[in-house]
Length: 216
View 1 (cartoon, helix red, strand yellow):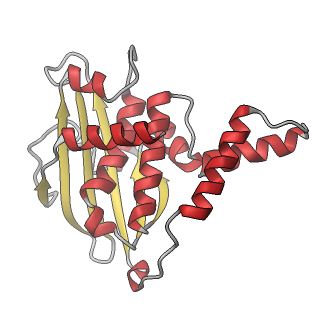
View 2: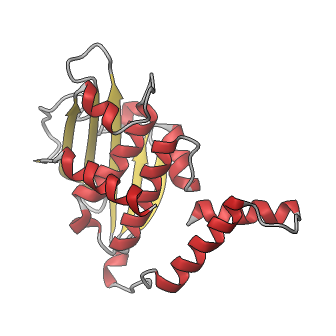
């Protein structure tokens, strides 16, 4: 949605009478979204706020070089409710990042956000969510809704579509790495003091992305 609005705004600023291909695609997307998209639902749960912290790690020397971590916090009580920790082999990192990428941390950071909203979908539905990350690249991509990285763009668009289906409202915020509780589970599957550990099946996430790409 945001990427299409940005494309349309850029075209209006140029003042060109002819529509470029990307502008036409943006208009088609917006028309389809407005005509066939889900209506915004009004829910009392929107008075509730949850904090979601995410992080990713990439350390090529490890047997499982990739790592995704997330922590769900209730700000009213400051209680950590649950966390997830997912370690990825080199083959799994290649499967969910841009082909040939030598430093796929950007895609992994975006992926951590998608994993967070997917694994806690039932907790986040119809609520306000403040999503914290310590990576500026993924933060900017999620706020703007666009990315020049093809895999990153797929993850961002999939994230937007999934959040829209949950009816929740997400605010993105940066957190300092030293203050990010998700740093530990992105590097270590044995974490104490972070609530219940939630299991994740990477195949479900890969299937979700594949379905989105096929629709695109």
